[in-house]
Length: 346
Image 1 (cartoon, rainbow, N blue to C red):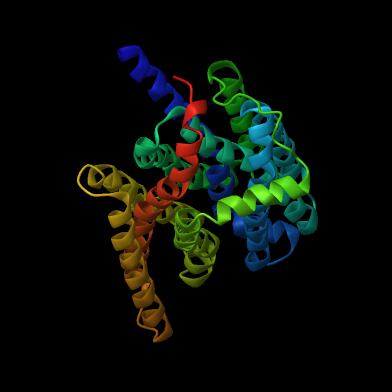
Image 2 (image 1 turned 90 degrees about the vertical axis):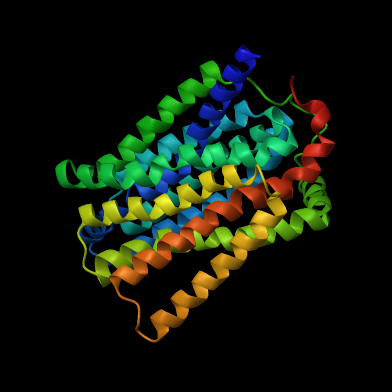
């Protein structure tokens, strides 16, 4: 029993490392927006397009890797994705125009997406459906190192070595994770050659999933909720550095403190799951997020929101997302987990 718990703890840690690939790629270069803009002779608003482009590549990559992870097993597509991510990160460090930089960020996202998709898929492989919400919350505890460490490390690299070293460090970090996954993580899914990679069967499979009411309800609700985090990440450099005129170090500190709300929500979720169902937690957390968002919008529209109020509202807004996302993911994936339970290794 002890060895089994140790094995599960180690698997959770490795899946957590995979889960931080994309958050580090997003968070670490945020303090460098003004430096990158100055070097490319453009504005921070245009630099933020590189962040939006990453999100687009990340979204498209999930469609690509789903069938590949089922057809070839979890690890082989993961290796390819991480290698693409490493090469694109090195390319970002060498970019000398904003257009090349934006394009490479898109490729970087396509590669890095494999880590996130594989990590989520392997939660289904290694753990029962009833444990999923807790496992996702534990993964978010590891993901929480990104907003705590990445902006601080990024600001230090910007001030000491330059912004290009951020992307070299991202490449080195992915190389280390690739090595650990290759040597230590077991394969969680037997390759299934019956999975077709032709467009028609893939689209048919997606359509079957989309027809499940439980999946589509919680996938859409969770996506709209989680979009609030993406909006915060994309807009925070402009709000705090351009709007409130904070420096890179101050922004990194504020960013880390605010995302503690997101991390705290995930850990509160672990406690709440002992007493309440995922459905109930999700409903009340989502209602709270909508309320905070409405207060924020109304206050900003009437010019009543200062820096202190912005920080407080952002904190509770992110806290609610920390509660909604793991529960939405667990509930939405539950039907497919039940149908594939026979393939889970003992």
